[in-house]
Length: 396
Image (cartoon, rainbow, N blue to C red; front, side, top):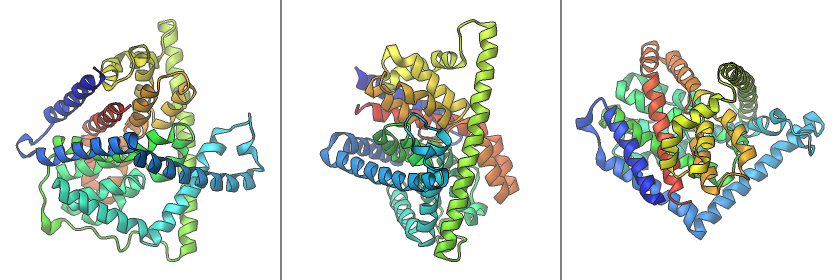
């Protein structure tokens, strides 16, 4: 029964995206079918095979070891405050490790290791799915770098992007996460669900965007250049730039959490004054309950889970993860898995402004275009998160 409901959820998601399409005649159904198959095979391999489980455990162990290294740096500066038992401070214990991960990414970029890996994975995806190389490169790049960084990496190609291609690029950025904050996510959610969400969300973003804004390959204007992806002139400058960027990200996330959590409390206070005992999370839970049930969430947990998913859409993934974290031992594994995969993306209202602002910094006219389809972008990214979470739920 759960599989049938999951398949129904997938059909509904794809149908909504197709209904939103601005060029239904040119939808590449073969490419979309291949990407769906890739999602199913990836999830099956990672969740259902001994080799896949070993790979997930190995990657999780690597991240945990990197987190230990990061904590050593934090402890040196803060005198052990970040690792004291019973004295956990979210900014110290979770957000500051972003600095170390950002440093690693910057160094790997300077050494041309990551750009080459991303370029050739993107090339393979382009060949399989029929999508242009630029969009495929951007989708893979978005798995490693933040929304702004991923878009800036293809700025030299922006004058070739029509509105549909621009939508796909923006959708990939919104449906992704940055590798620099994956370690922070893994401090709050089970590692296996965060790790499987990354490739699933990449494919989901491309699937939904390819339905909403189909594109055709133009070989003359479809080249990816990774020669000048780093502004650093030396290894140590790359380390320094990465550390500074990571510090900025940590501070930005902290500021956003203060603002969003405080605003959420204010809204709940207003709602409670008008409707005693009701919170915004409960309202959102009832709104998202039907699709949550189809995604595979247990009926007794669907309101609570729906509230967390809704919180992510109107605030950000960190706020929602902080709500889910204390419930992990209380909710069923399937509910935790489905909701965790849903939360592991940048699909929320604030991302519209981030992406539109980044594009506007590159090309003012195209930035205005992104602002115009901002809501369509958020709906598409949310559909992508639902698709990823539903496919993960089929194997839990």
